[in-house]
Image (cartoon, rainbow, N blue to C red; front, side, top):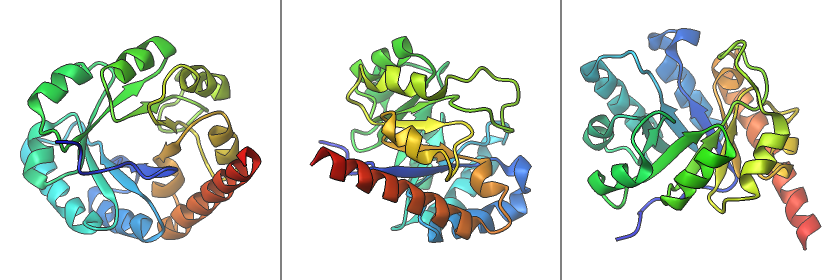
Length: 220
């Protein structure tokens, strides 16, 4: 049985971080972002106890149901219990092959990667998509090594798997990110730090779609 879900291309993914807005506002901001055009929400709250994480996942499932994919970071039990669409494996987590042996065939399985070698391994293990970082400097990971557009090109030139770029991406640089080979972007602060998350998401989506359509016209 093949996955019942497919990754929208180009894809706008919102990665959660309740530290930026507080858990009480997080649901409201995510709902606004989905209304603004976010294609996927990745629940990434590593320090939440399993019970609290599940409750939050269930609430986000209600927000995203029929509107956006919901992916849970590294917790298969929570993903299944909440009826999520996929699971995202951090780079230091188990291999994609091992994850796919214990996950339902319809569940998306993605992997975080930072270099070409890891990307090649995850792609060969049939990851449904890769999340590649860190591209540009970002306040969510201050001081972390960044790879820039060259890192996107290096990875996308050796894998056919869709790659979502993450790290310091906004409406001003998203075109260059897609031109470098990414199939979409994942953002945190660009939406969650915005005073109007719906407007921020809509602006990102419009910039992304405009760049994608221009690239398609060039390829014709």
